[in-house]
Length: 228
Image 1: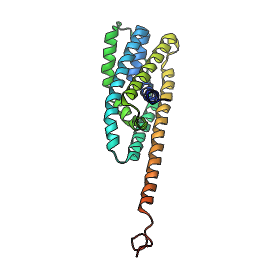
Image 2 (image 1 turned 180 degrees about the vertical axis):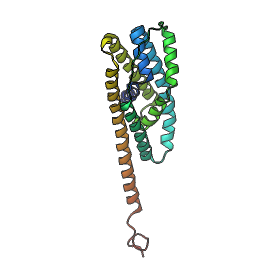
Image 3 (image 1 turned 45 degrees about the horizontal axis):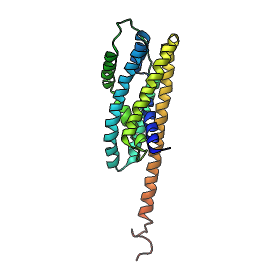
Image 4 (image 1 turned 90 degrees about the vertical axis):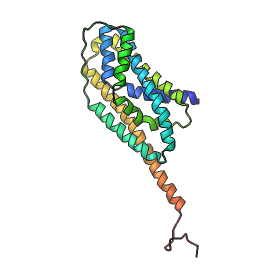
């Protein structure tokens, strides 16, 4: 697989992981699809994906400098994994309540703009990006623009699938179904968190072994053996 394709796939996996949990923006997309139709729901999803693209571009660019300057990548992976695991538990334990209003139908532009505002106001989104950053930047020399583009594609692809499914199977969309979907999303985040924790533990162990081998055996006098 080429570098660009791998970067797009890695970014898309992150965008999908962040978009799938059922939160305020997901409920807004579903509600607007049910009350206003599929185009309104897609415009709302496009607004959310635009914010994910913005966060992805800024945090990945800033995060690349941070990871390059951070001397202990294992600690960063462990901290990020712990934060992401806590968020995954929160997602699994949360309940989603669906309310379909009969308010007037907004235009596509208004639906897009209000979704951008709501997504920017969600404090969980940047935390998710920051927590998942080490896993994404572990791709090494992957081009950052392709990673950010992948985030957008993964996020918007989810909104297309979700809103289309809601439009086609609107009678089946209930709070119970959304809660089951939320639990699946939480498990997806938990897997990403566990991968970070494993990477951090492996890096920590490797670091200790390297330090031990670099120091070499020390004799009782505090000097290497064989030296008088």
